[in-house]
Length: 209
Image (cartoon, rainbow, N blue to C red; front, side, top):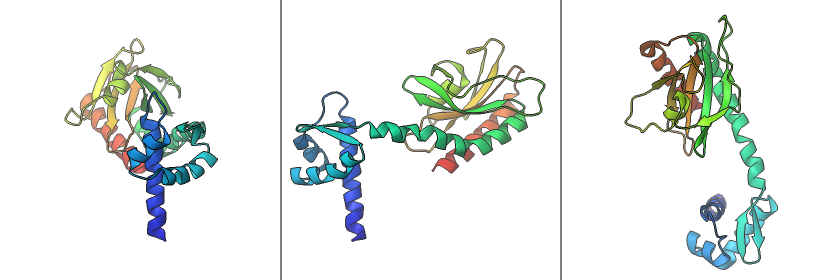
């Protein structure tokens, strides 16, 4: 019975993914049956619980994603924030700079968690929700780093005049494109700060797996 339930869940998730993968034209029941290797009758059965939770909606024979997915998506950032805060707090206090977790949203980077140091005279104010292009600033550029690239990178004044930033990618978390970084108005010693940022990114990645 448990194995059967697991197979049903797997097929249901495959069906939801098949609907999501049709970026423009909504797939038909027949399209979905072919995509997941099931009969049309099986697809109809799988759609029932997905529809009841608002995850998909039917328009005749066509199927589209439902608004219920937006409610689920809205829960992602708060959970990322909770998972990241302990490591960000430790990083901010150790470096004396504002620490942040930034995620990719299309071609933009968005800060989802920010911790400011408690002991510095002044620091960079960096708000949750702040957006900027992925190709500008250490936080955005770190997200686009390839696996073989150096563990961290820095930037100076790309987003705010006089601001220094160091960031490292969060690696090994499925479907998450993110970085951990610090930003300050004081020059940063990359040899010292870079490894601390990389370590914080690894801790956050582990907490999200």
